[in-house]
Length: 212
Image (cartoon, rainbow, N blue to C red):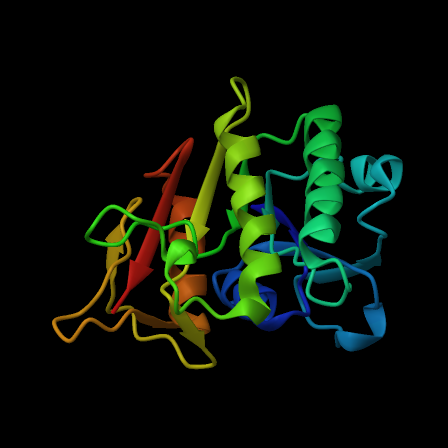
């Protein structure tokens, strides 16, 4: 499978890139700074400005799948940056007729046991609110699409650098927690779940999540 990957040098994107290559897929890494990636078999690196919708559309030509690990963390207006970038990605996806789109989402819009969202908790960290709002915007845009084939994977409340174990639980719109109330996943196992969905779609036009 030829997979276009936006954000291939980032925290989650790097894990997805590694997992996709390990499974034998061809990965087209679309990044703002190609110098961050080292050439390896199966990997093509291309510099693309995510806000250049025309260039992005051209880059998507011939791909079987797009995985977007786009984030707005580097901008002062994180939520606004994310919204503008995701709008550009969505327009390019439609213009290039990309067959399927998988999106690295956020956990903040997941529901807690009382029905409220994680982002509505009084303890939600203020420094993550911008990215949380941007990620929720992306989910809402996808849910409004009628022709696009998409899936949106929300991580656990805490995602940390770690190897894959293949041992985790999946959920849909509710935050997945263990018996102690913890919600955690490694970026390695997040990548496993994302590539599992790419290879064997089970959550088409849905949000899903995972945790240990």
